[in-house]
Image (cartoon, rainbow, N blue to C red; front, side, top):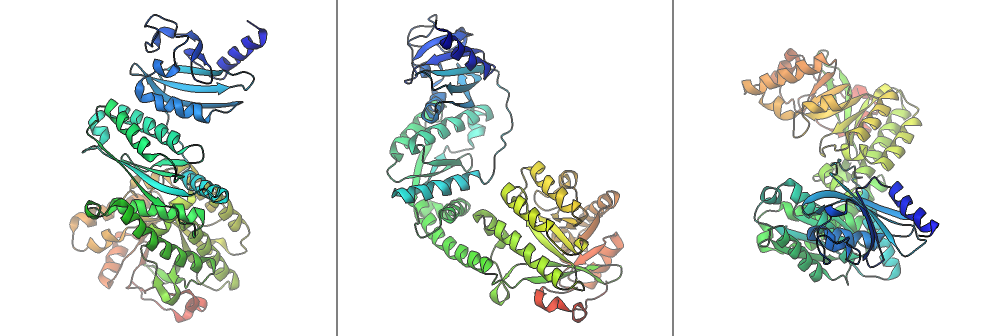
Length: 525
C-alpha cells in the first residue's frame, strides 16, 4: 500500500476513537473495513464476509439509513461530520464521516456503547438559518414554502415505543427531512409530533411523506398518520419575520384544539400568519420608531409606605396594553427589541434627572440566553452614566430558561455593574424553588395568585409564609404583587414581605408623569 494511503487511513483513526473503521467510495460501497467487523449487521455478501463490496447502508439498521444518506449529502472535502447516533442490530453506536479530499474515498468511524450527552442547542439557530435560507433563495429567484410534517400515532410516541427508540426515530425522520429539502432547506423538530420545514416549493414532499411512513412502519408504528401541510413564503415580509410568523402560526394552530378538526392547518396557518403580520408590523414599527408610551407602576416599601421604585411597562400609543405582549413577542422574536428598547428608555429617563424615581425593567429569559443580544445589551449597560442602584432588572418567567449557564453569565454581569436583579412570578409555572437555586437574585417577586388567595385560604397562606421565610433565610428581599386592599397590604407586612405592588398603591401611569415624583403620592400600608 502506498505510504500516503496508509497515512490517510490512520489519520482518519486519529480523528475519532472508534471500534470499526470503514472506507467507502463516493457511492458508499465498502472498499476497506477494520476493527470489530463481526459487530456489523450481516450484509448481502453473508454474515461471515468482510463486507467489502457491500453498500455501507446494508450493514446498519434500516431506521438509521436516512441518517447515513444525510451525512453523505452534506460531506465536503476536508470536513468531518458527526458523530450521530445510529443502531446496528439494535445496538447503539456513533457514526462519523471524514473526507480528506485527496482521493475519492470516505472514511467512517463507528463507536459502540455511545454515551448520551445533552444537546446544547442555540434556541435561535433555526430562525437565523431559516431566515438566511429564504433570503438567499429570494435573491436566486427560487420560490420557497414553509411546511409542517405531522405524525399522529394515536398516543405519545415515547409511550408507544420507549424513549430510546423514539429518539432514534426522531433522528431518522430528521435525516429524511434533510435529504428531501436539500442543502438549501432547513428543518426543525417542533415537538414529538411535528417538524417545521423551510424549503423550495419544488421539493418532493409526497416522497418525504412516504419515506417517513415507511420509517414509522419499521418502528412498529405502521398505523400512524403522516401529513404534510404547506403555506407559501410571504415575500412582502423580511425573511426573519416570515419565519417567525410561520412558527408563531404553527404553535397557535397546535394550541387551538378542536379548531384543527374542522379547519386544515394550511387555512389556520394562513389566517394566523395574516394576523401575525399585522401585529408584528404594528409592534415592530412602534418599537423602532419609539412611538411607545411606557407606563410605570409603583412598588412600595410596606413598612414606610414610600415608593421604592416603579416597574416599567410597555404600552402602545394611547396607553393601550400589548395583547399577549410578552408571549407573542417571545414567539416571534420581537422580545429582543422590546427588552433592549425598554432598557434604553429607562436609562434615558434616569440620566436626564438624578431626582427621578428608580425603575425596574423586565428582561425575558429568552433574551438572556441569546448571546448576540446579551453582548449588545451588556455594552449598553457599560456606557450608562447613572446611579446604577436606581435601575433594577426583573427576570420574567414567561419562557422557562433552558440554558441556565448562559443566563447566569449575563445575570452575574448585570449585578457586577451594580444593578439589582429580581426574579418575577416566583411560585408560578416553572418558576419554582429551583429558580432560587439556579439564579442569583437580590429580590423575589411572589406570584399574585398566592397574594389574592392568602386571606381566603389557609393553605395558600402557609405556602406563602414558607416562600417568605425561605427568601429571608437567603437574605433576599420579597415583593408581593396584586395587592388590591388595605387588609392584604397589612397581611403581607405582618408576614415579613418587604415591598408591595398593586392597584391599592397605584395603577400604571405614563412614565412622563413621573418627572416630578412629588406629584405621585401613594398609600402607606
